[in-house]
Image (cartoon, rainbow, N blue to C red):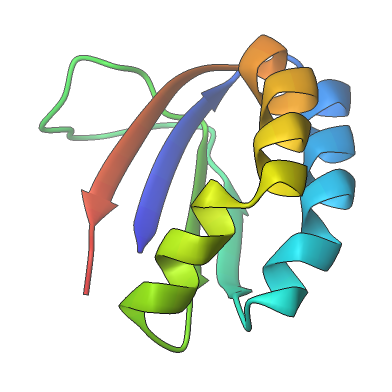
Amino acid sequence: MLVGLWVTDAEGYRRYRAAMAPVLARFGGAFGHDFVVSEVLASETPAPINRVFTLSFPDRRAREGFFADPEYVAARATHFVPAVEHTTILAEY
């Protein structure tokens, strides 16, 4: 997955990443590239983007399991939702 975010609370987003990392590892997921973006020159969406990263899983089943996992869902609700205003899925492979 190639994902773009508009992070409005960097510290809250850092807490989210720390909380979800063990769950991600349990499902065999990993971040490949991770960028803080200072300028977007072109975009296919009106949502702003200031963070771009790749997220990979061994297969679709692992990806779906990760996003449905209760520990991940709790970390997302507690840390991600207040810290990120927009999420844009740029591509899925």
